[in-house]
Structures are given as C-alpha cells and as structure tokens.
Image (cartoon, rainbow, N blue to C red; front, top):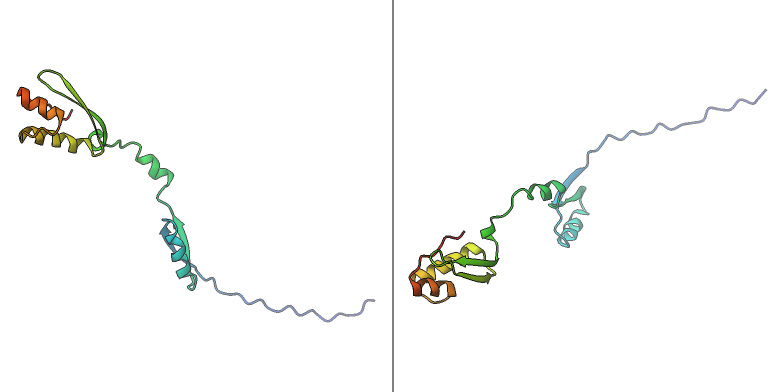
Length: 129
C-alpha cells in the first residue's frame, strides 16, 4: 500500500482580458522614420511602415505611357514648305521648346536656326507633330 499523498495545490491561473493593440502606419521615407519610431516608443502605440513601391502600383503605371511631348530630349522640326529639317536637343519638355520656336518666329527673333529659316524664307511653321 502506498502512502497517501496530499493533493498538490495548482494555483488558478489568472486570465487576463484580451487587449487590442493600437497600430499606426506610416509611409517609409528614410531616416526620418527612425525619429518617428523613437517618439512612439514611450507609448503603447505600435508602429508599422508601408511603402509606395508596391507591385500593383508599379504595374498599373506601365499602361499609361507619358505624352511624348511632355518629355525632354532630341527633337526634329521640319519646314512644311521646303522640308528642310532642324535637329535640336532640349532639357525642358518638347511642348515648351516648340512654343519657344513659334514665339521666336512670331516676334521675328533669330534665337533658333528653325526660326531664322522660317522668317528669312517666309515659310509656314509646322505643327508640333
């Protein structure tokens, strides 16, 4: 016969109520985010970061090609009367450069070879196309 053991005492576990954590989400911009994180360390607010470079964001913009005249680069202007061409390069967008050429022509300012040709030969200037 075994000696009788007194029942072991199992303390009742205290059940803590579920606490919901509060989160704040910030767009990741770089080193500035470490300052934000440090500010919120003293609070119960949790911090999460997100990015604007999501796959969906990157893929959806592929369908919308920019207007070719809103870009900078090399351009060719052709005289519609004699078909001589002028080739130039601009750092500004092509619409702006085209309007500069037409303004030089209207104001009789020899500030581009294209404008000089159009004014000297009294030719018409073409469209931006």
